[in-house]
Length: 189
Image (cartoon, rainbow, N blue to C red; front, side):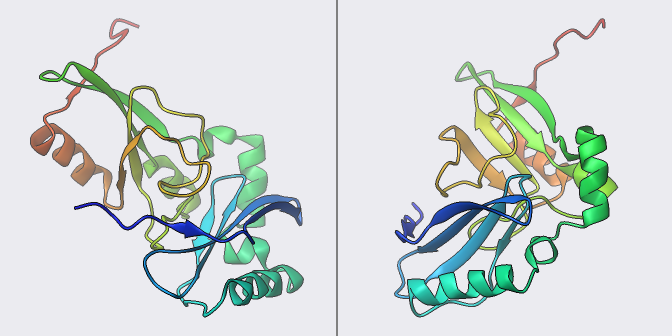
């Protein structure tokens, strides 16, 4: 079963607002209503729960957020946390792990965000349905972080899977259902 592709509005834009680089996505998926998602340059995102009758209505809602000075608040960015991330970018850095499929001889990279949740109390990104993304599985090497979620403009083409479950469930799924194994590199260091 394949997912219905997203249709993006020409009203989509990228801009700098209150010191935040924002990607404003207005899209729909097989319906006549439009959805709104805003992604910050630090990887935080918000998907509005309401559906908009028109593209312009979605853009107007985004503009109300900007005009009201609520960009950081609506994206879940705490200013004090953001300052600490500037001082210690490792807090926003996900944990990557190399995996392999012994039958297909393919390699993958698993990226999880547990450390971000643990230290910041926020999830960095939501997918287009508004679910918290807790990890990605990429075919081959992991792309530069942050990046938009799967299916959105600018998202890496090598995203195999997007996870919205705890790290333990991700590991169980990959090791049992997908039969992927950890690649041990430089174990002696």
